[in-house]
Length: 265
Ligand SMILES: O=C(O)c1ccccc1NCC(=O)[C@H](O)[C@H](O)COP(=O)(O)O
Image 1 (cartoon, protein in one colour):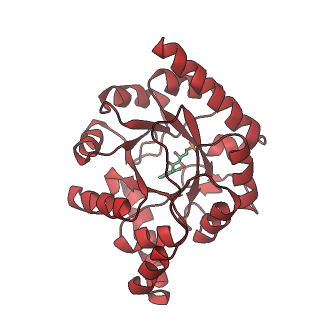
Image 2 (image 1 turned 60 degrees about the vertical axis):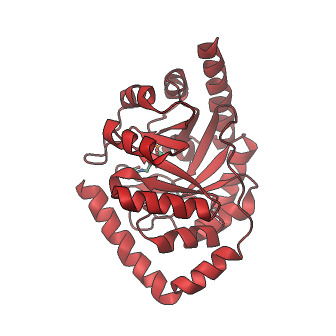
């Protein structure tokens, strides 16, 4: 987990700097005064969570994205169910300014995709308009996970609880998570293997909304994830590098819906 530990260490340093500028009492007040949460409909048909992703530890620079709001607008026009915004700065070149820009540009829910390790970040996320936050099971001990899940819920946000293996999925299930991510990227070596999704999907609790995360390069992976039970796919690289974000979101949504209805019949 060296990569994860390194990322979190940078996240904590950057967080300390922000907290020195804006104390917890102030960020809490800003969260309370923020625009209302946009509820994320967990019962809706198959959909795409489309990501604003400039750079990543595994792939380096991906795309410039000078105006994340414009990209998010194209995703929304393509029918995205939510926009994921990476706000971690050192390894992903994201920012809270990106979150602001996206939230102002669209009227669908926005996910703050970051390494959430401190209470402060949840109030900060809400203060910047986040409707969904990421909880990575591998990054938190079970007590923290429970507390942060409760805090996200208290602030009105939906928590996307991200898992990578059977053990983490059991933790998410015990937590009662309604929105569970199964990420096919191994956090130790950053390899992506889309075959990791199906076994996890089989273990997911009945009634949860399941997100297949990472590894969608095109239609083949969308079909594969939908056939294995994904309710949503979270797509970053393929959308920011493919040159046709709106059309790709439209296609992935239509394809996923078709595959889900075929497997239901
Ligand atoms: O993308 C990475 O290299 C990465 C490395 C370490 C932790 C997280 C990482 N990515 C975050 C994500 O989960 C993805 O951005 C997301 O699932 C979209 O993946 P993709 O469609 O494969 O870009």
